[in-house]
Length: 143
Image 1: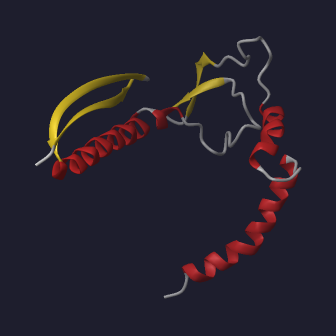
Image 2 (image 1 turned 45 degrees about the horizontal axis):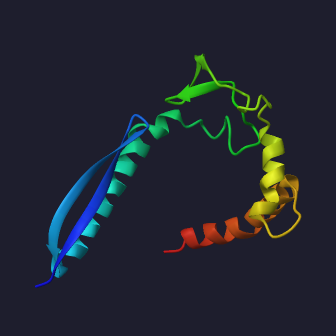
């Protein structure tokens, strides 16, 4: 039975700080696959826990902001409410003001293969919804 010396670093998320724990083990061929899955699933569990318990608390409701165009917001949001005692910094480290609409326009070509503007993309999305939503609704209602 072959043994492998394996170093594994597991990460834990908490208070926006990553910490690591190193594990050293001699593992047989049969168990190395199981160990990798154990570590991977443990990391996924930690990430999901962080998203559910910490990150989501600071997500802005979609009726307030969706995408870059309405950024920056004036205040940090906690548990679905604007915290007016916690203002955001609307400036880049260079002192230039943040402008979500301008940033979205500038990065549009990176995410598309054509010269569409944000308005063009929005209009195309509405047309696609008009085409595909009735199809989805039809199949959703089928037995």
